[in-house]
Image (cartoon, rainbow, N blue to C red; front, side):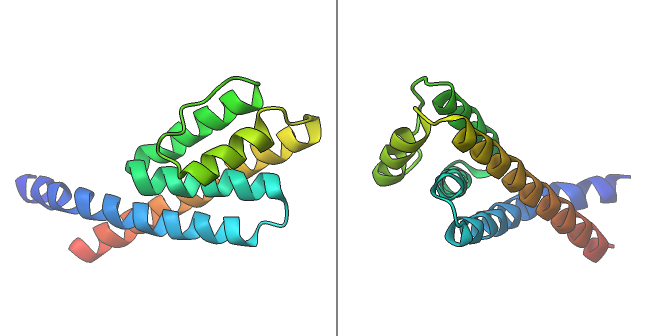
Length: 129
């Protein structure tokens, strides 16, 4: 049991770092491919949050995007000034259809991040034994 514990202690930081990098790249690709400005800004915010804050970035970005969609101010100090400004302008006073698109983009980014996490963890654990 001790050997297994030591392997996991070694793997978890490596897998986490690889996951963050891969998730950031995948979400950035989603942002670049987004055909809608609302989706694009949501994906860009998430990519920047994951890049700056690591694994917690997705949850933090989601919470702050929801604050904007509810017409409240948000803490976007982890985002670039341009992205933060565009997000406030686009999302804070968004109409109903735009809010639905933003929420759908958050869900899609979460699925990408979740799927990448499972893949990286399985590959790392399989390769360790």
